[in-house]
Length: 345
Ligand SMILES: [Ca+2]
Image 1 (tube, rainbow, N blue to C red):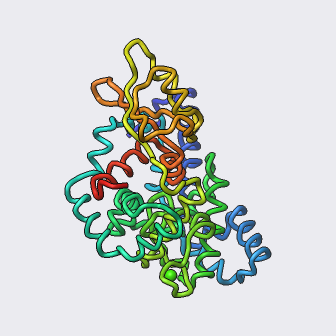
Image 2: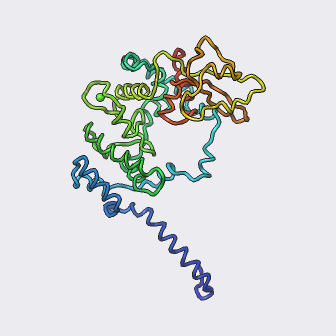
Image 3: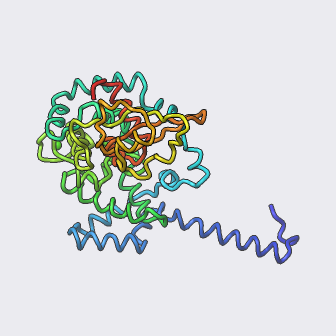
């Protein structure tokens, strides 16, 4: 306990400032309190916006907003401090070991045989092989087993009305969540998903659900929370729209000749921006029977713990999977799992 009589003027000032700062800090979590959301001017603006634009009743919106819970832990995950970001960087082997395990491979084969009809139908329509769809489902949610327990309305609203750089993105996703609930006859409060607001078996964000998901079991609704068939068709449609080319290879291990500095050839964007010929001319060795010289391709790097790096040649199909999750390692894990489940991609 600090004895007030011993304090100098400066000490008193320091304490005063720290008290004021801690009071300011509590306003960040003020939305915890029931009804407080409806006093927030941004929330009021949003309610009026979607009432006018989409004719949701103000009463319905108010009822949903007054019971929202601020998701502190989810916000920490979506907006990590630099120190926490650095901790997250993993080696390719560590990353792969999280997803490509014997159990996940075995469960993938079971899923593949159980949903064979829908997977074959997806291949016929979109040209995306069953193993790639199953690979994505395995990495995302263990084939629908782990879809996340965060209440999506709470997390999306927390991010949408928090002051950080992705606020606008989440405000848009929140609007889409209300719309897709209405369109597919699902209670907006029943959506559960990842801390980041990704929904259901394939972990689509609400806008992706509305733009790219399809009704694949023909029941007239799209339900990615409950229908594996809808999830299968929707992943295939998503990849197709994002550049998947039927019957084209996706990737292969590639080796630089000695004296070549491969890092300067690594893709700077999520696109096949170079060609097989250019990479071969620069001094990379690859199986030319699989890769015609004119094929668009880029190099991707997968760093290991010991400082070495694995390089893959990646075509447009590889990059289509990075549109699902913007990371080389993510796509590489999906393809590794796909190959382990069913060797012929
Ligand atoms: Ca359906």
